[in-house]
Amino acid sequence: MTRNRVLKTALFAAKVVMSWTVMSGATSLLANEPLKVSEPVELGALEVPLAAIQPLVEQGIARGEFAGCVIALGRSSGLFYLQAYGDRQIEPKRNAMTTETLFDLASLTKPVATATSVMRLVEQGKVRLSDPVAMYLPEFAANGKEAITIDQLLVHAGGLIPDNSLDDYFGTREEMLTRTLAEKPTVPPGTQFQYTDVGFMALGALVEKVSGQSLKGFAAEQIFKPLEMEETGFLPPPELAARAAATEQCDGRWLVGEVHDPRAAKLGGIAGHAGLFSTAEDLARYAMALLKRDEFPLGPATLREMTRPREISGVQRCLGWDSRSRYSINRPDLMTPAAFGHSGFTGTSMWIDPELDLFVIFLSTRLHPDGVGNVNDLAGRIGNIAAGAIRSLP
Image (cartoon, rainbow, N blue to C red; front, top):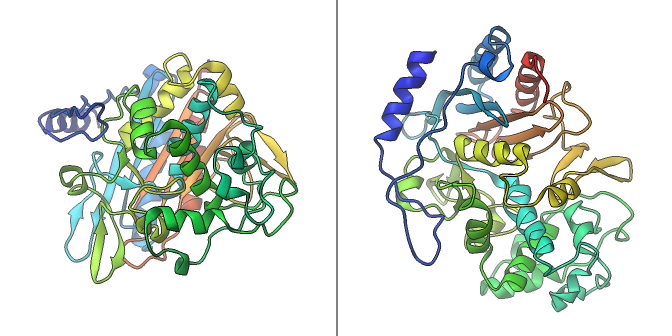
């Protein structure tokens, strides 16, 4: 394993790619050096239990649940497991999965890009969590939504429908968003948890209105660039899209490096609920800095508030993150009550446990090629293996 990791590191270091987390029009021609992958024992974990991961993954691939995946396990001090399995694409031709594969994160966009951006605006004094969304987006007040607050949308307690009709997506991006923001609540706001993409589309629009930048630009400047996540962002350029994992077919072509979510696609690939692309290593940078706290773009007080569970009609959600709800079926059983995470429709998930000082990243090609794979159980089992291997606590 060690020799393979060294070889992968050497090969990746030789690659030149174009970064698209840019500021002031500047670009970087050389990607970050790969993260060091330490031996598990160096980071307080046992290596032997981790050997159980490979047969589980191979069984999932054999069942046709996904074509391939990348798994990253680590702590605030670094990675202790980074492996690629299977293929990133099998139709119309086979391309092997690598640890450098780019993934459409789908709903992981919500916490990593949108919620983190909202919290950045909060600590900049530009918005408050208790503010009505309509204070910044007057069109959102339509149909009785004038009192719905930012924090209600962050925990999916705004009473909004999960998705509006694709028939609403015509005309300009502004017109599409206006129709979406005008949707009527289906339950009284603040009374129950109802997972909604519409709410996070509104939050993405709020970030753009308040910051004066696109969500793509604000997240890059305020989050991804400080964390040196040079391969994370919306609308990946051709150099990065070429090594993206495939999802499904659309209009007779395979989606590779193009957003899978149809509403995000209609909105030009930049939306608050979906559209973000990243790699396992870049997400590991995000998770490591969050666990360290003092190296994250948000301050410790902001992170504490963002990741504090709220009780909503029998489920627990954090601001942008899941804690314990019907959507947390890939949550590792052995993580502590402090754990938070999220998943994406394309077969992605990330769970972070501050008390164990552990993160588990699982990125897969669940939708390729037939759109019917299921990886939630596997992701949870891998998380249990990782949590069970931890032998030292912070």
